[in-house]
Image 1: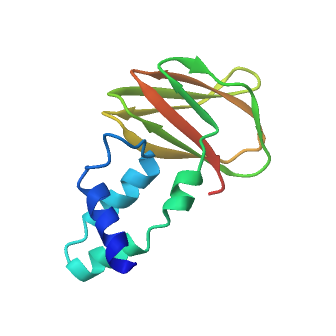
Image 2: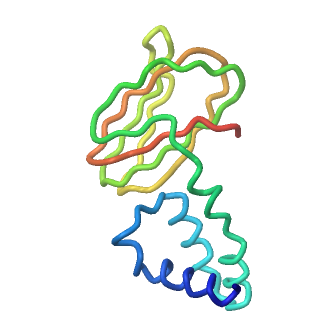
Length: 140
C-alpha cells in the first residue's frame, strides 16, 4: 500500500496527471510545500501526511471568471476572506451594505492572499480579474 501511494504521489507531483485531472489550488499549494522540503525523509513524510480529501473538499463561497459582483453576505464574527487568482490581474473590493469600500485588495501575477474582516455586518464583493478566481469565507 505504501509503495502504491508513493507511486501515485510521484505521478501527481511530476505533473503526469495534471493534464487529465482537475486539481484544486489548495492541493497544488500543499504539493508545492512538500516539494520544497530538501531532506528526502521529511519531504516524503510531508507527502504521506497530505489529506487530499480534505484539501479537495473546500469549496469556494464565490468563484468566477473576469468581472463579477457577489450577492450580499453576513459576517457575525471576525472572518478571513481568502482569495485566489489564476491570472495576471486580480482586484477585489470589499463593500459594506451602505456601498462604501471597506478594503481594496489585489494579487499581481496570480496566487493567493487573505484579508481579515474584523467587523460584523453585511458585505458584498466586486471582483475584476483577467481570468478565473475563487473566494472563501473562513474562520481565522
